[in-house]
Length: 354
Ligand SMILES: Nc1ncnc2c1ncn2[C@@H]1O[C@H](COP(=O)(O)OP(=O)(O)O)[C@@H](O)[C@H]1O
Ligand SMILES: [Mg+2]
Image (cartoon, rainbow, N blue to C red; front, side):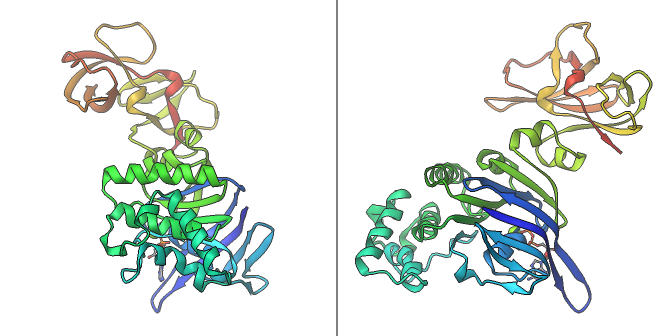
């Protein structure tokens, strides 16, 4: 539905130039919920604005549906009004001097659509219904909570019945509880509509909860693009691994026979790449195993529990193994003993070249 080829966007100033988007190629499916995930400054917003037609790329092409909307090489560019997209941004951008109804009606009345009053009314009320705000149509926009304002922005984007919805950190101004509620609503609506969504966030939990596929961005480039589970279980680099959640990392080097020498001691690992020498070994806190007595299985070490924090559904412990501190997470709530055995199951260890 959205096809991006070799996209480049450079910002030049007197002193330097930034390749905000640096050769990105992505294909987003017709009904796909696609998330761009990355730290602040990684180029997510710029990429989204290029798709929207709010930035003119310096290289590459963008097509929406089967229509080419931008080609730097062919000097071809269609502006935002001609792209038929819905957009929701971080700030609600709800107009304060208008009612909820007028806010949602605005793009229908002022866009290229030329609709009758009755048609506008029908589309606005349908959109408000979808975000459960039909009862508040006449309320002045400032008299809404943050979550309600963001839903108005969502209704306004959906009212034009776009084939593609672009969203840039739409939840970041909401408090934690509302954020989850509106997040679930966005997911439900996108399922119901079967539209393509291109969604930007720096929050990996949000990305995992929403996405069919995630592209992890850094310095204008896509590091890896995959469904959330695959990114989490099989990150292609240490950077992606660390970005997707807490990780224990150990430096080591591969010795013969499938062993890696680390600060902890020798670890048995499944080594798929025969060229690996200097490596980082990664294991997630919930993948460690803890036992009160030795089990005799591989990669097990005596450990001292330094701290144990009960968080309700989870207990998080810091344990010291041969001078190294590892983070351990478990759903068992009983406090562990001070002396325990920690195991790093060989099949859970991820190896990255260092
Ligand atoms: N209008 C602009 N002028 C100059 N530099 C910009 C502009 N917009 C973004 N940048 C730079 O481009 C890079 C990517 O920014 P951005 O796309 O906003 O990242 P993100 O949304 O991932 O935080 C940053 O280094 C930023 O400073
Ligand atoms: Mg941004």
